Amino acid sequence: MAKKIKKHGKTALILGLILTLVAMYLAIPISQAAQITSRQMKISDSRPTAASTSVTYDFQGTTSTDTVKCLRMRICNESDITGSCTKPTGLSTTGAAKGDAGDWNVWDQTHWTGTFTTDGDVKYTYSTGEIGGTNASFSTDSITNPTSAGVYYAWINTYSDEACSTAVDSGVTAFYIIAGVTVSATVAETLSVTISDSAIGFGTLDSSEIRYATANEAGATSEPGDDAPTYIQVSTNAASGMGITIKDDGDGSSTAGLYESSTTELIPAVASSDVSVGSEEYGVYGKGAGSGITIDEGFDNDTTNDLAISRIPQTFATASGPLDAKNVDISAKASIAGDTPAGSYSDTLTLITTPTY
Image 1: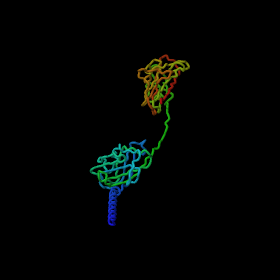
Image 2: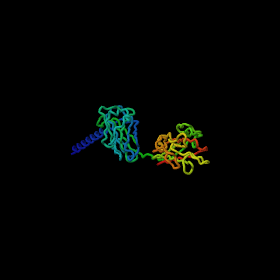
Image 3: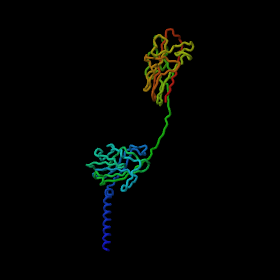
Image 4: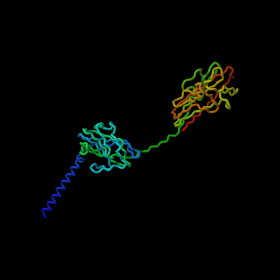
């Protein structure tokens, strides 16, 4: 009986040694793998799932120069690469894709095939294999971040076989998921309107010619160039643009035109394209509109449906969107007859700019 008991004890001891050796053998691929140094995980967006569902995870580190045929990345709650890996809640890699070639270094991105079927476990394999080295990197696109803020860990392994079973290199790197900083600002509704010259004039009118108003009030027989004789400049952030209306003071009571108060004489307002030599006529029109501003058909001086200014506001120009310091010129021309009474004639033009938000 004593011998049998001893035999059973010996058998149990041998079996225990075998199990211990098997356990040690199974641990060799990780425990004897070379340590990846200078390792880091760069992520394109650190916000949790709700805000960040298409993130690039770019692992970088210095590996051994052994030939490897499998690159593996697991995202875990735990930092111990020899233990078990729990996928963070909300993390998803099943919709991932191989990262851009520019994010791969040492290993040639074109050689490696990605496998993303196991959530939280990304693998790249290449049957021929490549060696690692200094500043090696591989990246994965379209990963969904974990739901909650906190520290998580990327377990990185390289293997000498496509089955990803014999480890060559290993390393763990932490990264942080955190909500972004919300920055707020308010832009007020804005409107800025300026007129370049508030006094323009024809000088001395003569029945033998048409005269154009100039900024120096001397007048000219030819139309002044851009931004002359005066212009209205508008800046507004109104999404639907703005409108400019124009009205004429005239005789101050009923009729538009150039008015001589001491004699109550009036050179009547007409469409600008109708002003002609030898007649008492006064026309106002627009020209030189900046980008985004449209001169109304009634005041574009093109002979089609042109309008005379009135004591009632009329649309002079419009814009359908925001403007940044855009101009439209305000021009005028006049003529008189041989019997037009002498005097000092004047008029006041009122321009009203209304934005539409």
